[in-house]
Amino acid sequence: MLTSLTLQNFALIEHHELNFCSGFNVITGETGAGKSLLLDALALCVGGRTDSSMVRHGQANAEIYAQFEVSSPAIQTWFQENEREFVADDGVLIRRQISAQGRSKAWLNGVPISLSELKELGRCLVHIHSQHAQQALLKPQFVVEWLDKMAGLTHQAEKMAEQYRQYQSLQREATQRKQAESQRQDRIRLLENQLAEIAPLLETDYAQIEAEHEEMANLESLMQEASQALYLLENEAGDGDAFDVMGLLGRAIKICDSQSSVSQTFAQASEQLYLAQQQISEATVALADYAEQQLPNPERLDMLNGLISLGHRLSRQHGLPVSVLVEEAEQWQEELDSLHSQPSSDVLAEQVQSAWQEYLSTAEALNTARMAVASKISQQLVAGLQPLALPNAQCEFEFHKKEQAQFNAQGMYDIELMFSANVGMPAQPLYKVASGGELSRMALVMQVLVATDASNASSEHVPTVVSEPMLVFDEVDVGISGGTAQVVGELLRQLGGQRQLLAITHQAQVASQAHQHILVQKHHDTQTSSQLTILTGDAQVDELARMSGGVHITEVTREHARSLLADVYQHSSHH
Image (cartoon, rainbow, N blue to C red):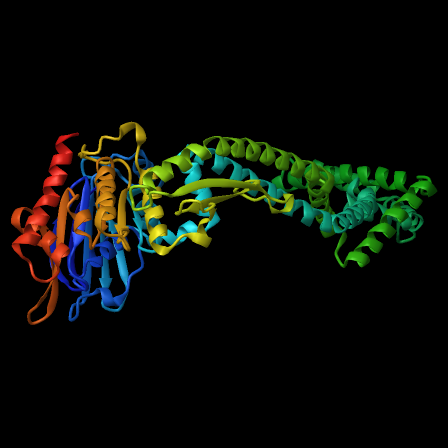
């Protein structure tokens, strides 16, 4: 519930703080006085667009503060989902600042808030029905959504709409997958062929294969070199006498051993010579074994030749070293696994069909439920219209099954609101036969029916904190007068017993029904300004008299105004 609205340098208003009651608040004033400024300011506080013209001439900024008391779970949920602190006792304070350059900033309980967040929160706080709201009646979607709200079928309708969107999404994916299926299969074949080709290299250490191949290709020559090295170690000739290396080492060791007790140098040399003798002995054995081995196994050599040739060919083919190719093959395998794991177009087609059947089932059940309540709801609509100078009003809902290709998120049927205002005239589509005034009254009744809880229809109970969003009507009574305006006022007062609402009116019969009457007046001093006043007593009587009788207020028009107020109080006492 909106408790107060503070305006600072906003358009024609220099400064004003206005408190609101929890029931039916009405705004009146002469044409051009600035009645719509309050609605504009409130719209800004729930995410409306700004304009530099909203800043009072000569000022740098305009500021608006809107204070709400809240008990709605939806608002608390919004605070939780947006990770903002919510303190019920503090309520919600929205501040909107507009610069003379047209820039704007917004704060929620003193913390900056984005415009998109403000709009989301605003939908939980205020519902604004503009004077052109009746045009929505001409849109088929509005009629269907209104019927669902009245019948309590909104959740079921949202479920069906989500199922339809899921079906559409799967259908698009299936179509794209079918178009890409041939490309997918070509890619799978390519990857499988590449992996099959490189598979022998993945099972070995290619670096070791290269080393082994090079050695085996040169084995005869290497065996000869081993024999030559062995000959040198065993038969080194000098001065015509043959000495072997091991014999010379033995003699050197003997000399060093004989002097090791005299000199540490000889002792260390002896140890090193012993080690050299051992290593040469091992080298001699190894060279002997290598020189006497058999020639290479032709099959092993052929296998190595095959692997080396494969490596060279794939390296040229892909322009990559074999070591990098092996790493690349791991990525090929991952891509192949991914392609194999994707559902085929056949699998997706089954999912599409399943989603379509789920949608059809929900849509059929929803349509059955809509048809079951349509007659009762149309009767409620007629009952609401008849007191508004439409005594012969007829309303009914017609259901026409669409072609299957036309099924959509709203269901399988077109639902049309049929209307007739005259006796003996058949009901026709609303958009064909309803006048502007009839549309306006239809819009009001539909809004009242949706907003009113029929099980709690106490017309004079004014709640302290309203959990439902505040309703704002901008000249919803346009085009009506007299007794019809009286009924509209009673409807709005009844609605104000259950929800806070704010309305602009030019009708005294409507204004007299308000729980709080706000007058907007324009003053021409050094700079034109609009001033707001909450009317009571004689001041309210004078304003109602002005609205009833024009510029010149007489005792007759005052008496008429008093009678309007007396009717309200008398009607209230009966409840």
